[in-house]
Amino acid sequence: MKKFDDLMSVKNEIENISASEANEKLNDSNVQFIDVRDKDSFNKGTIGNAINLDRAFLEFYLAEGSPLENNFFKENPDKEYIVFCGVGGQGALSTKTMQDMGIKNVKNISGGIEEWKKLRK
Image 1 (cartoon, rainbow, N blue to C red):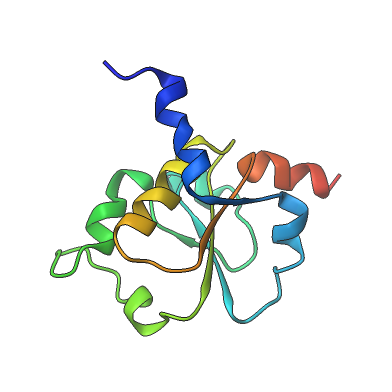
Image 2: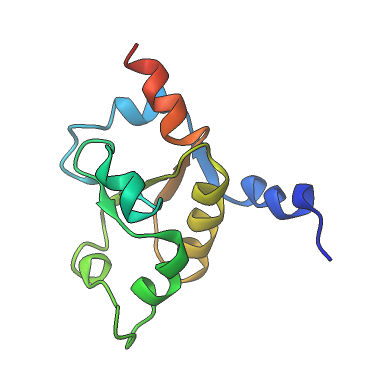
């Protein structure tokens, strides 16, 4: 069975940005934040204009022809996508998944929304 550290080595295969770097992009119309936490967490608060794409269903949202396919990515291929979760793990895995499924210009917020909240204190 794969070890956790091996699983999280995916962080070396994606682009990670800090919460402060993400904050600089908050009002950029060419940037879309993507919250991969579950719906309950999303409803308790998110970052800016984030859309919720629950990690549990991410592949279904991205796969062409899926009943849950989200056309947002086809309609906005040139946007920059900034992914986040609670503390960074699911965001990293989601960013890798998005890359593998053909989404370009996707980045993960290191430390997730918890790092983001530290900026707001």
